[in-house]
Length: 429
Image (tube, rainbow, N blue to C red; front, side, top):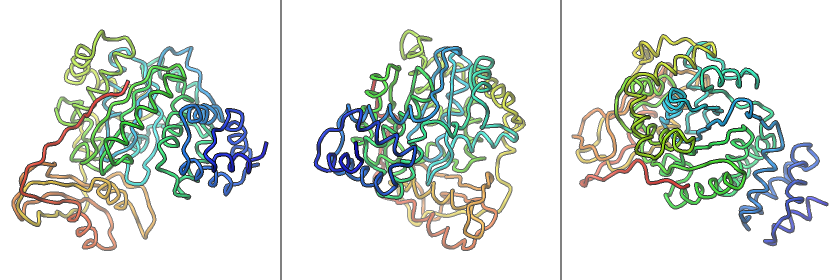
């Protein structure tokens, strides 16, 4: 078998066998297939496509290219995944909510990537919290507290790490089959039996249209079912940040506000995702009962108490959970103002995420700073008057404040008609 023959075959639109895909993944991992050959193969996939069987085989081969976690001794565990967004802190609400209701959660979370935030970064806002722990410790914590939130081991889905980097460097990121296989290979390697996917769409998501988001969700659900796990996907909007808070400290603050009982979009989406997980985990007979259970767990404070247990068990301090105001920025700030009167008809969500990310730069280099970020005063559909403050920006050091101000002003557009918004578009299961 030869990689050139495999590339040629896919270039001509022919179907690849499981053995050919296995050969490719082995070669990627052991280095016998060169990077330029891998990118040629990925481009052939983007141009000619792969069918479901090929996508499933690619997913399983990537999952099996590294460590496969076995959680049988822990029990059936849930994992929740978001396809990426801005101010998306659902994990900090969903995980303790489910754990407080008797559902075991094995949550592996990534770090900030581009304009999207990373849950692992947010967990480290709890000073001392350890996101990198051994597999056995991970299992022990799930048995003890019902949940653990960690960064995935470097040994998980090894092929995906290599391929993901090359995709970002070769213009092959947006192919739905490659996205689905990347996400699901990591989820299947984690050993969980129940997977809930929050599949985002909109200008602040990787999938810009509702149609593409549904297609991705359907493919991931089909892969999960064929692999023998329970899986469903929630389709939710990312045409504006999920909350008004953008930045690590601020986003943790927003999640604690919800765990203290505040009802907003984060509360709505978190309780919805939690309810779907409760049904799949056979903890509730139907969705309505499950959603009431989730809302009650949040409102009663038992989810917040469970978050404290999770944080303490992994070395973190809980002072900011008891006193969330400690997370509010005390550094430099400025405000931007509406350029005209009217209804907020567009928010460039991905650009807001990128600006928040860039606020961490010092001399052009990203240096992690949890206390920088944005607080929005407006949502889509709100009416503002010319000169109203619409956003606060918190920073430590900026080379050009005026440039950031102009960028932020350009993130908002105003019109004469009030637009209607919908947070949750449906479920694929």
